[in-house]
Length: 323
Image (cartoon, rainbow, N blue to C red):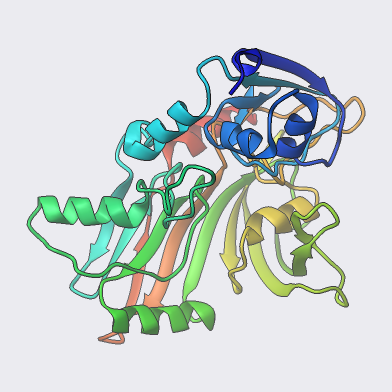
């Protein structure tokens, strides 16, 4: 990286809808698209003071961008992949465990599964939930030979997630989740509020013109979704919801409520965007989405299992800002 790049870059951009990484590469002389992606993933880029880690974040209108390259990119990104950037505090709490499966309460900021690392030479990241679980079990003397992924949560979503500890358990659990036999209940805080106190959203999720997931018309390629919700409590600046999923599409809750004008608080991709002179809502500490309850049939015994993850304290704290 050239010396001219090794500084704090401050930009004022008005490129609404365009991907953040592409605009940075185009705007900052000498910065490649790959470097722009890495800088965002490393947490070196902020929009109006809010750190952004999603390279394809669509830009809002008239935004101030800071890109801190004073210490380079690769060294900081590699340090995070080695664990220096791991979330603070415990990455999970065990809610249920037996010889066939384990259900944990995942902390926000923890990857629920390994993903490819971009531009680092690493095949996968090392700091993810299955790795944390394996280490914790090994420390207390339980050697786990297999941890099978059944479903996923977004990195910034907290709450219940189940892993299989045998291949047969993974197959049977995966069938339940794919066939919608498992129950998944979330708690969410959204800006604005839905018109009805209780409703069922039938939508179709696909890809918009900008490449982001969005709701599309029936004759457009995509997947049907069913999202049920009820209002827990309304506040002047936002609403607490309980949400049940009949289908489990990627980003389903986030896209569904953004589509009806009630984006999930703290969502950096599908969240609130300024319109005219509208004042911005309170800034959320993170994505305010929590997988509160899981219900499924035990893959071996057939008994119904119900597990709940406590509502995080930051939810209660953020509600105060909505008054």
